[in-house]
Structure formats: C-alpha cells, structure tokens
Length: 112
Image (cartoon, rainbow, N blue to C red; front, side, top):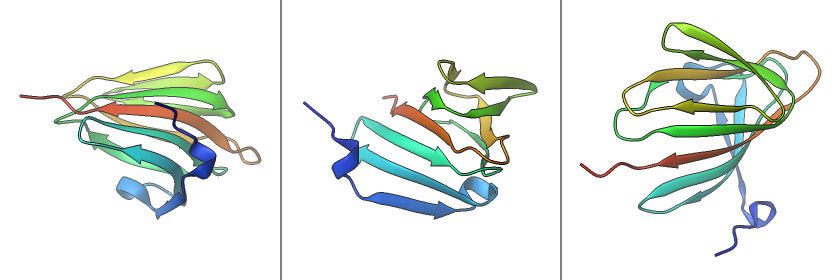
C-alpha cells in the first residue's frame, strides 16, 4: 500500500492539545494506525498529552525542536527519532523562530 501524503488534504488544528499556534498534518487513519506528515511553524507546539491507548514515533525530517517527555527534555533535529511509549506523556515544540519543523509520525493503536 502506498500513502501519498501530498494527495491527502491538510488538516490545520489550532492549539492542538493546548499547544501554541497551529499543527498542520496530512494524515492517513485506519482502525490500527495514524500515519502522518506533520508541520509546526516557527515557535508552534503540540501540548503535553499522555498516550493511554497508543504510542507515538516521531521522525524529524527538517528543522529543530524539543520534546518534553515525562520529566525530561529531548532536543531534536533532522534525523532524530523520538519515541513515546504507551502510558507516557510528551509534547513537541518547534524552537526555531524562522524555520518550520517537519516530521513523520506513526501512532499505532494497542489492542487490550
């Protein structure tokens, strides 16, 4: 199966999970996964949230940012991968004042 993110309509979500500015994503969603190409404009963020029934893998394509992960801070740049296991909390922040933070993310749903 091929997912052509450019052919998927972009979803703009203001203040996602209490974050700053807007989160923009081209998403493929089925019963098992959310797979997306995401963008945070300069100084935008996704607010802190807990993955109760799923986990999340975020691969940074370009830009720089940070994840607040539980009680730690992880600094990210292109080529880095952040993993938030089920039961943990994180946020994603674009720390640049001029460059977008572009990333690929997979959120697999866990069956109980």
